[in-house]
Image (cartoon, rainbow, N blue to C red):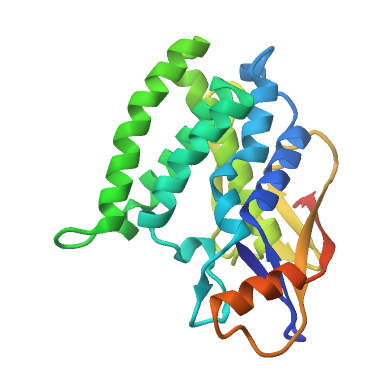
Length: 258
């Protein structure tokens, strides 16, 4: 779960699967890069839109962060909790959408753990580090089987996984108001390699440079739960009840070239 705060003290709660849906909107606005022609564009678009399938169970009954009185921010949940969730999400993706989507969901989880493994390392035994190591080991073996099943090369998987990763990063910024100073993400090029994308926020719009989308602007739409200003939740039961009672509201973001 991620959040967007407003000056009056009200705030929005956005689920991980909802933010992933926005990633799928971005991929379709991106268009079909030549390296995905003719396939597996639909599978990549589905993987972008469903890359957080692992979080569906947790979002239905989130844990409480006592320091904030809110549900736990997704980044504050330890790998000992979310690494097994990711592994289960991969199995769900395979069962629901087939091996290509499962392959990309698996690779996305591994990319996250590759990038942020230092968070889960400590001197001596650490359950978070152990959970990451177990995920990486088992998923690497699973991906080899899935790649053989779909006939994919390492290059094709990495190019497709890069699209999942960059739309994920852009969507987190759009939905959750991530601090954008110095923010960069690597966008895959049609001919191979990547280029840094830069995102800036202001005046009610977000600018992206260089512009990777087909049209002159992209309007993203999602749904969030809105909370009025006031006391935060004292315990998990009250928080979950409040979350269930909070009204759904539409939210949008507008992306433009710099």
